[in-house]
Image 1 (cartoon, helix red, strand yellow):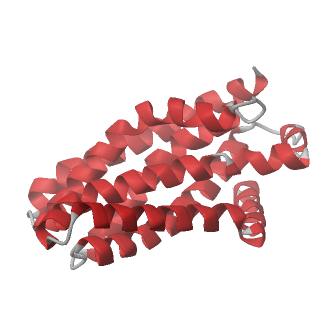
Image 2: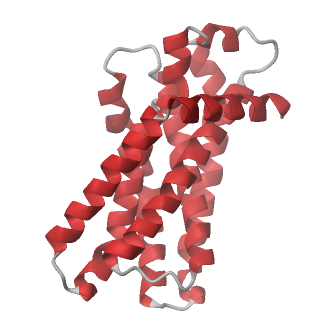
Length: 221
């Protein structure tokens, strides 16, 4: 457990020390949200209706942009082999990188949520539930993106291959998150929305468990 937190903390320090990756992603997504807000027009009802889909598509793009950061720095610095030579099972590498990706997605997701609320009139009265769906959706996305980022780390063209492999598998997570967010924005009672939250939790458990089990064999291959 200590090695997992150490690895995630080291990656976060390097990421924020460099700043290039996360700042570029946030700036790109902020511009994208602004352009979409202009494209949907000035009608608040139209903007509010589009807000859940825009939020989660933007977060999916953020996940795609940041996914390569988990193993990209290891390959650039030549430290991936050092991690693989560490005694013990290799699941800790997956969980450390997953924690790093998840932390980045949560930070970017909170910024996107505030930007979407401001530009698209997304009501945040139930902000606690918005945070819950952000946590569950980001975990499911990070579980898959971390696995594929590790699989493609040493391949050329990984920046192109990663989104192609990633998006089909995260469609259930994005759809469930969009439907739950849409229901929150429309003021639908939580009893009618809880199934989407359970679905997200089930996907998270399946994705994290399967990826953690397969990850060591994928590295050896």
